[in-house]
Length: 256
Image (cartoon, rainbow, N blue to C red; front, side, top):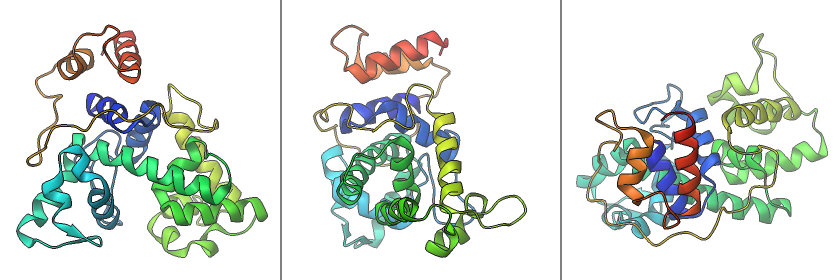
């Protein structure tokens, strides 16, 4: 999965450490994960609606034109492809690519709403709540941090009780919910700062080849992370993109 995330970071220009942290938080790096309280599924826990809208906007540039062409206004127009389209969420390569694109979309929208670049924790909030609700949350947080988060976002609270309420069932304030989110992101971002403004890592790379159908993870067969990266990007020299060179170094350091 890490190789798929590294390639997605390169293709979309988004931050590798942030995308890896997001996958750790969302699914514990399990591409087959399925939420019990919502439609969220896959490595990055895309809900049905968010998956379809993101794939519709960005699928074609990543070789998924067959899927994006079968989606209109967030709805699947070809029922025969529905299973394959929704099944792509369980393909770590496709899921990581769409997560990178969604992170870019959310950063643009949240920068416009906040008047500044979001940091990693705030950008993760954009994935968790959607950019619109995340911006509402952050603006409300700035106005009155002790206000009830559940009162502001009751639907999100109902679907994420462990975030919006403490162990006793008490409703958390906006400040407290943000503290929980910051703790999750800081703990998962081993190679970055959760509180620094998160700008694009670099311009996106050229579009990927077509993905004809859901595929299995490239990590099968007991290969190391470094070997998997080499098989995708080639040698570890200067020809590899900066994000990938950093991934080589990180995986080799940990013996992966």
